[in-house]
Structures are given as C-alpha cells and as structure tokens.
Image (cartoon, rainbow, N blue to C red; front, side, top):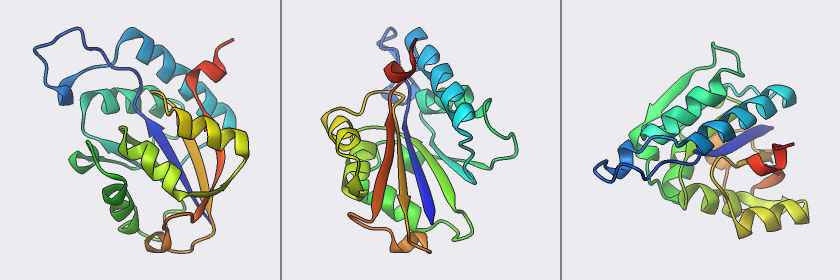
Length: 172
C-alpha cells in the first residue's frame, strides 16, 4: 500500500506588492496554521518516507513549520516543477518515485493539488470528499491511500481519501 499526503501551503501574505508571487512569505495566520498542522501530524504519527516541496517561499516556510514535528532524517526534495504544477504534472512526478518509498508528502499549490486529490479519490468517506471538493483551503491536508505497488500505476480513481483535515478543524 502507498500513502500520499497532499498538503497545501499555509496562508501567504500579499502585503508587499513588489514581491513576485513565487517569493511571497507566510503571513502570521499561515504560521499559526502551520504549527497546528505540525501538531496534528505529530499526534497522528504521520512521518512520510519522502517530502516533495515546491520551491516557492510560502511552501518552504510551510515545510519549516511541519518538519519540526517529524523525524529530522526524512529526505526532502525541493522542486521548482511543483510550483503551479498541473494535476497531470504532479501525477507524472509521483510516477517517477522510487517504489521503495511507501509514503510521500507533497507540499504544493492550488489548483493543481486540489484537482489531483479529487482526481485520485475514487473512494472516500462522503463528508470528507464533499468538504475537500468544495474547498481546499491553505494548510489543508488530504490523506490518500492506494493499493498500488508501484507509483507509476497510480491513476484517476486509484486511491481512497482517508482524511481531509483543515487548520480550522484543529483550533480549540
């Protein structure tokens, strides 16, 4: 079984209009959401074999927030190709993963991440699927499980949406 964690970057700031979109940092609310997700990941024992992260500043800062809750030895690959990647591009990147990687986390952007999750989720708990397809907010996490043995076998409808968690779900 392979597990795919799709984490959208946390809320970014538009405060400095001179910055290119690629260089926008997290805003305070985004850092708070990142910490909430880090606690959730730790509490759930989520520790992927590999993290693929967009090279955009807001994605890297999201990685910094959540990586503290995981084993420091988890390999991380920073990929410019994940910035504004299409669902097809994301799936093609996953297909190139070593099959010894059983769990991978992708930290990326909408609309590609949301579309990939919806495309893969052939089976799901109805409420989670409805929530995910109606809105995939910043710092939201989709957990998809699949029975494929090789990443290149993963395709449309080939996974089950096990969880969809948003930072607001974790606020107390």
